[in-house]
Image (cartoon, rainbow, N blue to C red; front, side):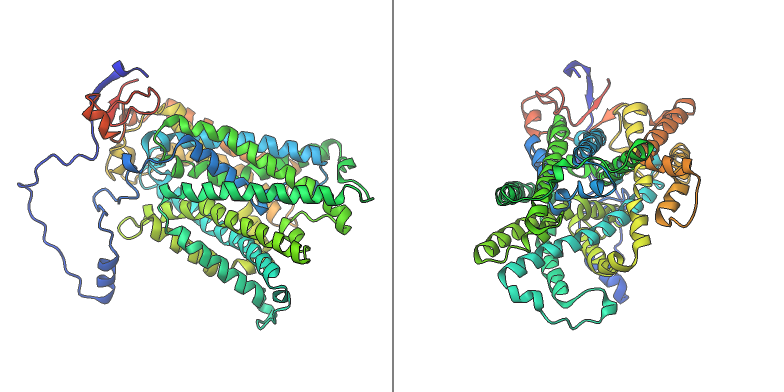
Length: 565
């Protein structure tokens, strides 16, 4: 886009208009205890008219501190975790060879990286989070339904990931104090958790709390630390396993091929591909929650390479490590925490402690990046008068880690766990509509001012619902419902075609919703929403240099202007 295309500057957060003529509002003093409490916790930056606050507003220039390498580091640090290590395990257990398992993971990560990058662009361009820019395709008030759905997902998976984090702390305590393995259990069997694991759970949670209080733009330093620490741990475990097992006899995992063939192999491969892409569906919706803190639009391109590369590398480490454990212990240990728990010599315990620390650091960061910040943005949107991102993270952590009692879900509520695992049939449809509206319908042109007006152009009608998005969203997930129900309860029989359609769930949900939404907008356009792009203010130094808010970078610095492409 050339500088000559700029017509005029339109600053969104200006305060030049005088308020002398405005009537002075009379402040209502609460008299009830609840009213006084709400008054006490009300955010100073909250704006009732705009239903916003400082964390929900477009990120100001001084807080856009993420550079391109920060997004790359973010994804590298996210991949190096216990779940990344054992990513290939489930694929090999259903009959795929290690080669096909890694190929499946590589393909899934490349495809989901493309979707994430495309849906990260609104954040990089307009510096708003998912709950705000989702108001364009869904309508101002219907978007709250999507926000609520994503919030539930984030809180649930926060709890499940907390379980893995507690396992990391437990391995650390095993390494430091071997007697902790035999710590007496004082909890009843019905609690579905033992005392030593509850202690590990509490320690892990307390380690998370300080990180929740870090401002989002400053979490880049935590991810940098994590990126430096966790790969060292991964390479160390893999190197030790190869060295220790190379001279031992026994069957090789690498010599094994597929145990399923033909049509069964094809649909198992597609089911695994859907599962792996579905795991990234949360990122496909919350990508802008981080990209909004970048100061250059092209920064998001770095995750196209960092995301698949780091995840594939970690999966390779897991396969190599598992192959070594078969010779060392006579069985395959896919979980790196189970592997280091076998290091009981003095030197082995020291190494196990280091690895457990690295995995704990990794798990804290992954839970924050994937779950708590997304849920916090959603809570921030739903309750902008009282909840900012910091408060939202603490609330999400308390609900996910304690109120949901994830240890009960993982041990006794398998149907509910299966339900949440298949939640991507809804998230994929949301991601498809976001992509279609931004890239195909409005073609990158939003008016950021209207995003904060409940009665603005993105309200669509008196109910605040864009019926086109409602129809597209319904078309995206309803046909997948029979296969989804069968996946939760195999005793409920559905035709084979419906089961196989569910195996294509992410692809169907994304592309069906995207195409239906585009077609409806094409034949039934909402004309007033087709506007010239209005962006938040950019670098103040550009204005001082007489550039009218337009920087020297053609792609990433044309902020604070109304643009006509």
